[in-house]
Image 1: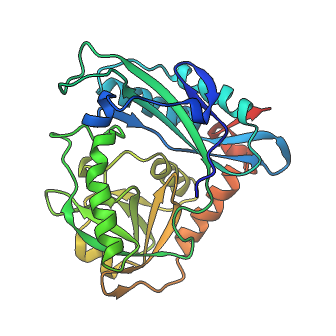
Image 2: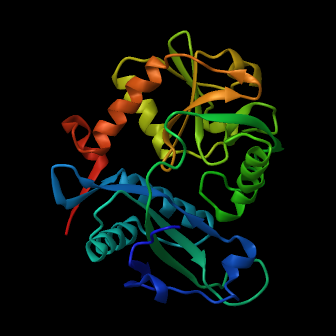
Length: 303
């Protein structure tokens, strides 16, 4: 059972969650013409009258770019303002996940992005761990990650998530927790809603943005952190075989945070994961507002 926050941002103001409703004829519902973001916020461990949002500006920028891919305008300041008002209205006391969403709100048919109304909403829910922090088992999906030439993968376009949904369910129904998708060139792309990293010979390797990945914000944060603490990061194509012989494999995402992969197909990946653990504890420390050198990644909202 999801505990939704009592207030949502809808049609330009904060309204009770139950009152934020769309029509069954909403264009985006039929054609996937929408884009979303996912953000986490936690009460400040030192002062619970503040909420700490992780990389809110970066999320607002990506949502604004996603809107552009849907041929509509949504400014970063509009997103930040709405987030602020929403947090203040809800006064959350637990860690939350926020879902900003830009969509074609027109009522009608014909797939198009011109001469159409769009709107922007946000709702939130309480969320602990999305994937087990102890690690997940993964299978190689029979579904292939889409290509950027046929779908704008630089944005979180909601229609793109049909493949994620098929891959995730296929994985779970066949006894695994999560799916890893290969791209059309047969290289490892990403999981159903997370980016992937492997460690080989003390180097951190992740598929580059040319591998049809989503440009993940947690991914970018992990790369920057690794560089800062002197871990060599390489962005390059990853072959399927490498997954089985890697020293460490882990997934990153707003919902997943940093999650170890303990098994891929029939191969167990048992190891100490020193690099992942170092990055994970650093990231937790930053999100809790305990790292002054990364203060720029935290937005503090006071009730």
